[in-house]
Image (cartoon, rainbow, N blue to C red; front, side, top):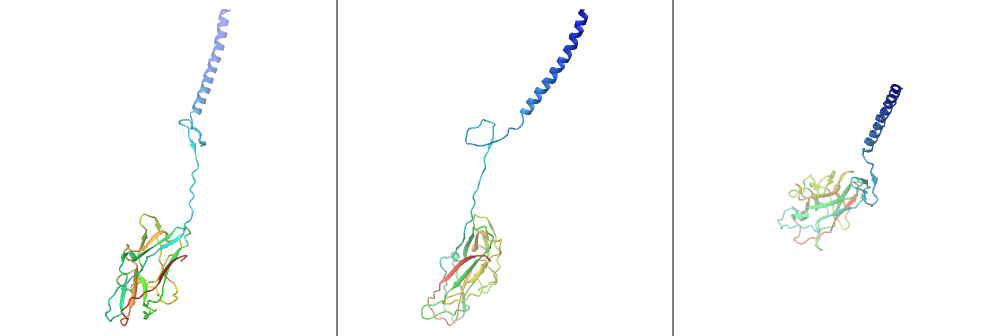
Length: 230
């Protein structure tokens, strides 16, 4: 009888021990799964435990600006009478550039126009045709290249594609017609652009004085404007 009981006990202990092994394996698997990456919650302003992350949504409101022109405050020419036709350029470096700032983000392009009234001293006047012009030279009134242009210092820009034919034909008059002197293609000229000085080719503002002109101080109202679209 004792031998029989011993065998029964051994048989029953074996399956129980095996069950313990299986149960321990189940517990281990549960621990490993619990060690995975924690899910981030939405930040609510309340304190979170160390090692716990939360997420925010960052929003930037970036609105369109305007198209502006910063032009010279004055233009000036000086020349002595020598009895010959003279092409006189404005030699003031501060007047040999202008800045166009296209902050619209539209990519529509833009153009700069100029008009000038008749150069007159009140009693005599310079001719309306051929007296006033502009280009990218301070050495030749007939130069066919335009002024150079760069991104304004400290800014990023998309450089313009200038399609203007230089020198443009500008006719002075009592009521002058504006003429394009810088013309950008669409999708160019975005940001702040400095046209002329200190580039390699400054803006040349030229006045032609005929040899028979009466020595005097001649004045003209010169109007510059920037307009959206090429």
